[in-house]
Image 1: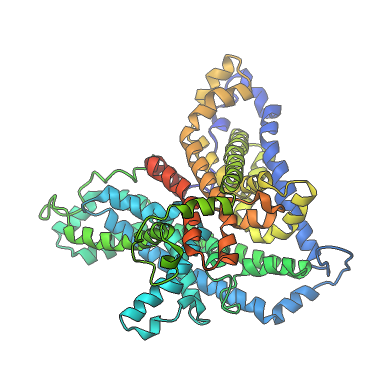
Image 2: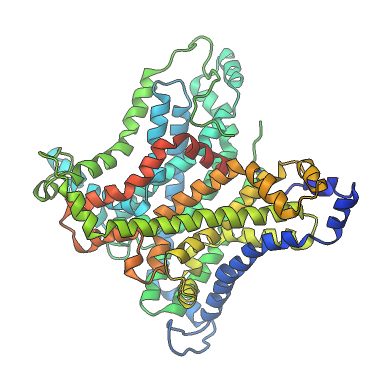
Length: 310
Length: 289
């Protein structure tokens, strides 16, 4: 959590004491430039340049091939009236918010459980981390079968009529399936951060509280929660940003359907490209980028004030 | 260093409850772990069923006999060796590229922090963390095609670039904790910057290399979005991408499909269970830094 604010480097403090390092102060050794060069060159060519080209074309009517002409903000105006696009933003934001809450609540609960005095601690930990190493789309295919056949079959045999139809075929509830599978996969990485946070709390703090007669709930609320608050913010930022880009799990689980009810913004952008709407999709990408940056910066601001150290 | 995989040495409960470990909590967690086991159980049993067994019921029933031929059918259908080789190429480029490019850049930045050009480069490269792939995906498709990189090598390269911001962040944080005095003596002995980096810094970077390498491997091996969009030739598609052959065209062959899913999951599962300790401590280190 210490990263973004760079500390004063050691080199400035120590250089200048000998003649050898003195020259380093004035002109950087060419070797340093060559070390930095690949990163800068590749980043500029493959990230900055395409981004700028993309922004440029978002003001044209380019189809991805052939000729094009400048259309100004036409694409952006159309976006605003496109119910499919607006629907994809609505779905993506709702999905990202709900999944962030679900992931953090369950990850924290599991982390507390796994750091308590339990049997089989190592084994249980290993199991809960498994989803982290599996491919999202493959897991989504497995869950697709689970929701389409296993759940309805079990529901039928116990007489629960509501569950006999596949969750994924229901326009109003398919998003819940996407939330469940995404959370299933994302919980381990959030949990690992919480576990590290919990292990950093000295046991004596809890012992003192117990001696003072604090109940388990009270200990959680007054000790655990404030001390992991910083980790909650870190986790929320990391997971929220990932969930905004949701793609793999949705492709495997619902393909964006039924209808367009689970089409994420990322899917919308790619679909537009396949349909020859290059410029229009690019305008969508630019808007998406601005929203992502604004949300990230807001979250970072929030993070600044909430760092908790022991 | 992270201590995740090993149990906490400290007492968490009061002296009254002492060293007693809770069976109640263990049971709750064991029940919760079913959420992980059920999909995996489905994947394993479905992969061993006959087509008739797989396409009826809830999928939970055990197979009557072990139908190993599903694996060979799937193996041939998705050209498994070829897809696996593609995934390996992507992962190797992503891992080696991430380690080399990010550690060098981070070293140059940390040792020249007092120079504006290096400082601004750092913030410029950090911007990569804010750019989601979908935003640059469309121009990227054209660019990679133009450069002849619409193949697994290009996909690996894109993984290097899009994780570069985060990796440089990890490396710079780590390098700042290495005292400059260590290098001073090497330099007085006449070592050049490259020699210092290779012989002194690279070995010290060990734990951070493991972290960056594990992240790069997992992210690139499991990714679907980039290979699906960037790779032009269907012959050079990675393991996750070839799985939708089943999802799209063979919706009734669940037994063969699951055999294929299982084979696609197996490599990372095996690596995870063999190298658990390092995977978990590596990921923790990355997350906490």
